[in-house]
Image 1 (cartoon, one colour):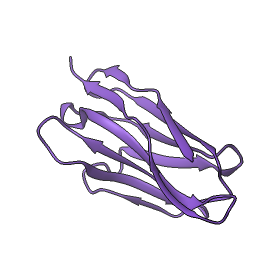
Image 2 (tube, rainbow, N blue to C red):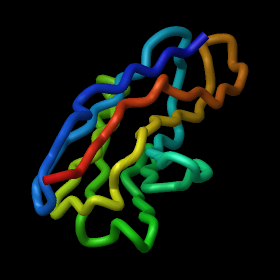
Image 3 (cartoon, rainbow, N blue to C red):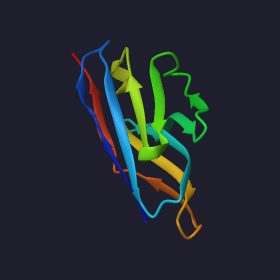
Length: 120
């Protein structure tokens, strides 16, 4: 079992910043990719950003230049620095991790989500 716990969500004003964190724990041998997704009310969950173990990143067009994903492999933790926030960034943000457990089984785990609200 692999658990992901997100933190750092909250209320921000338009143009403001927030930093999300997601720590993975449990039966982990190696985490290959970590990512952030989000789901706004009445919409489907959408990809935000991802990062490989080696540090290669990918972003949704809607957040390029504003959000930065990073990770600390030693801590099995991924971060999402969100700058220049817009009201349309309001959503529940979910962390995802894919990797291999100690018994060499593959996992694809999700966190419980953290609410981000951008409003004046």
